[in-house]
Image (cartoon, rainbow, N blue to C red; front, side, top):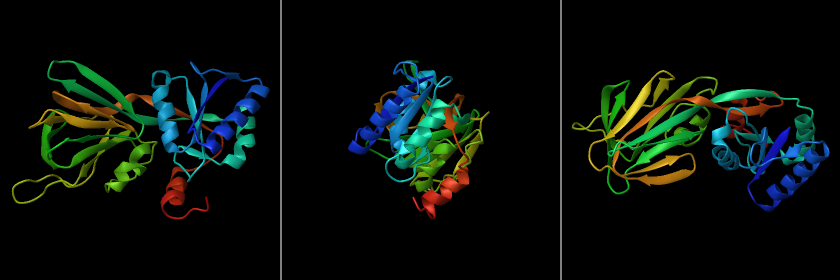
Length: 265
């Protein structure tokens, strides 16, 4: 089995990376940065996001697992003290692969070019200078004209991140869906939006069309870019899925409880 380790690059994460690399090599596993079978992320959830985007072209063959060096994460659920136990389980292949849905974002430009992205957590849209004004289309039908600070489209596994801070629902990652949430929408007697998160199934599309300025700040997980001359932004549940190596039961709702309600971690 081929493996690679993505470190947060702090002292603790690098120390754990060196130990894990030595242990796994001693078990006969091959260090392979180009085409690993399993990627071990050591740090925080953001570290795993970096690993995901690094291997986004190999999602069908790469499985991810995370060790958290800070607070319990949704993607990094192993503790530093458990590294030897994790290494042994990897070496013995004592894990099953589970899959979570991803978000596909396609940005169409006025010159008919397009750029496609995959998001593990979410994608957001904001106007760099003024209020964001977007026509929202669901399955080709106009739904509303949004005015406000921005919009966020999230995956089920990303629903506990920025989406939750915006008042969105927490969605179990076994559901193939995406969720659109508003950022400070303008609602008065003249301008109206639905004013609630929208949960869309896998066979639905959501297209955002600019009404005024064509330039937008678009984020895909931790990556933020300014896109100019945008014609539309199309979201759908991606055909690709992210694969995680699961070594032990850790129910999603237990993660939610431990992260937001009560935790001894």
